[in-house]
Image 1: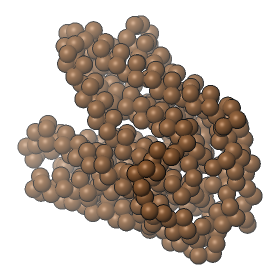
Image 2: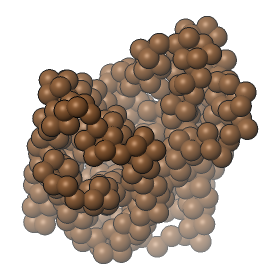
Image 3: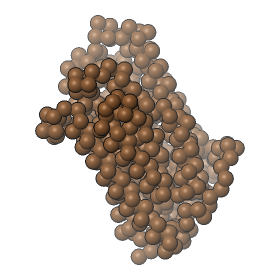
Image 4: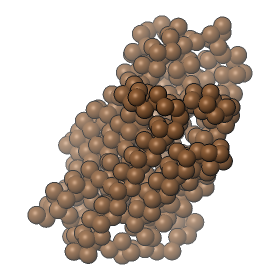
Length: 435
């Protein structure tokens, strides 16, 4: 895709229609994110009422990620072959099946099968929704649209995390009603995906979008090495950023805040949650700024630089925890708001599904490896409340990984600022939308 390229006339869509599509895609992703995070709030019930071990509970989430190391790329290839809308409908239906089996949950093997089906389908659903969004917003406002999309995803996660509070009457009846609610919300996700599929099919039949099979080609492994160098820089940033942020914030942060910073469980959870809560509102702002002013690589470079600063502050100072929380919140708001629409600018539309699938495949691989590495370093350092210095090797690991991520986005900025750029640093000419 050349610098300043515009979508073909067949890609021009109704201005009002694309925002309806965004609303449906956002509802679809919010429901699936709620289902993914629905296990943690009922973990205590599963131990007391069902007699599950910690290992069995952990497996309910582990079984979600492991298959996607191999299957995420396949999902991306199918999206390029069949179109994102069709894949979104199929995978949303499988997500609903997985959520229902999880809510039935008896015996344990049925619950784990449900999580397996949901996990495999949800990853492909996520990629399909992103690819569909890129197609419908090819004429402009891509970053803002994707930022709003991710904000709704965060709302889904935040709602699941806080469900024991606002849904306290549901939790009075044990483990099954909360998981049944999650299945209902996954059903709403399926309905949204189905409506999106119908709208997308009509738009293609009317010529407002290119036919789904217009550019379908047989996939070859050799095609992967033909992506532009800028794509590989942004892939490295995407994978490394995820390997730092999610293992720390979602796995180790609360325990670290308690042992090393002297916080109570409630205080640690609150400090951790504000990163995600702030992203609900800040992500669309940064998406709008990217659409309004360009400078996408520069924005990602500045945001990524805050990550090693976070671990330097945590490991070497006694500064208020809110300083590091704010810095990480800025990074988590900027990078997702810019990186996905920037990826769509670096890849030909006919190969976008494959490109996103490759990113998600490597993300799942490095997420698993990073969680294991960080946990091993914490054990090696004998980390705990009696020895908080034992967390230092883990902090160094995350800090050094953050620096590598910063180096990758600095190389991206250098390339995109030159004559071989794809328009990441400029305001691209937007195609007028048909009325």
